[in-house]
Image 1 (cartoon, rainbow, N blue to C red):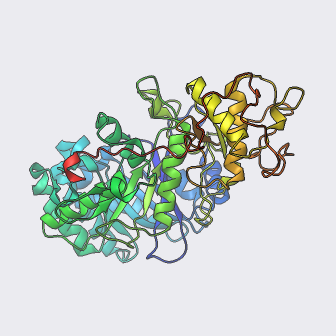
Image 2: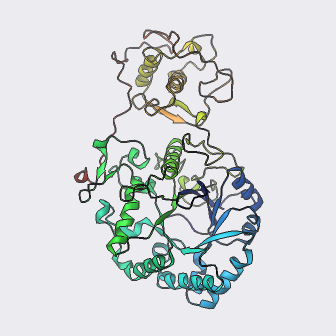
Image 3: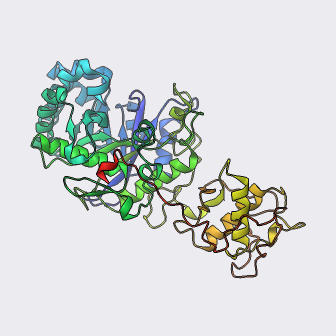
Length: 498
């Protein structure tokens, strides 16, 4: 799905055990101020990254990675695939220049031959398996076959009828390539590389796939998608696509080839036609994805089986052509500053920007003002939030708007409740953000490392008749239940599967 040229992928090792999964992050280089290889490696070290996959075999990057202990996957670019697939000598020369020349200083452990060849470069499809075999032969001749695995990434679009997963199969026009390709992976002990983008699945579903289902948000059992053939329950798009790939392989009688996800992510910004490409959705998806992988959750078909995944991408690419979202898949800006702070508490040390305490609950942009006022009144009343800082003359009175005051009250409640699921919803008018909303002398409760203006959450809060934001509390639900977590609606691919 993503562009292949001038990119690289980085992945984070969970620990030293091969049986555990790792998280990967792509690095595109379409930046007006692309860091040089030494700066990239410095970021890798700062982020405690232990695995790297390059979309090519850039010499400068391989030299910069030398003696770091970082495990490296190099790639044969698509524009070199035809030559390598037609000549054993060309393949051997490629391995000699791009692999053998850098070992053992650079710890190269895998080679990706092309990227999404079957869907983006169909004229090269007939030589794809030959290229993989020629590369493998060169590794065998150099006694490196046991150390370095060979594979090729595929777009998930090669899988047809992906739900229910048990009915999925590879595009049958591709079987003349897929069958020998899978035989190669099986015989060499390698893995199927797959690119999975729930964002695109969600956008292209025209509302059939709920946003919560795409973002890994928790679903009640009654809202899970059920494969009617296997009775397996699916709580997210990601698992369903991966299991579709497993079933598609089993349809061709391959049942022991593991899968690794080479690309997955969510854009943090989009244009008017991409309303769900937002900072908070990107944060939610990637944080939940990382947690899913780190916990070795596996999929309903293969529970507990590690599913290593590469997040697209490390940097935002301002020079990338296309829509605004194409430029905003990164975890970091070019200067190494995080685009957002991942929600990773409880998942171990993964990235140095793992600081969930630096999250805030604020009013959602464009939310109905009456609902905001009602939510504000509830938070300052039954919610027992100390809203004194919002009173006239106090630090958070200005700006005197329902949006500003509701944001403060929402954040206070969110942190008073320990940032648990459902405590930043308020009937859909609140959202979690990583941008500190503090301003001037008004310091929000979630502002980590700063002096706080909040007091004990059990202190007396303004009554429901408070005019904190200049409006009466006529919209308050008297039983205090109006602002429970929003009910999750689910219409998954086809309601027949529910």
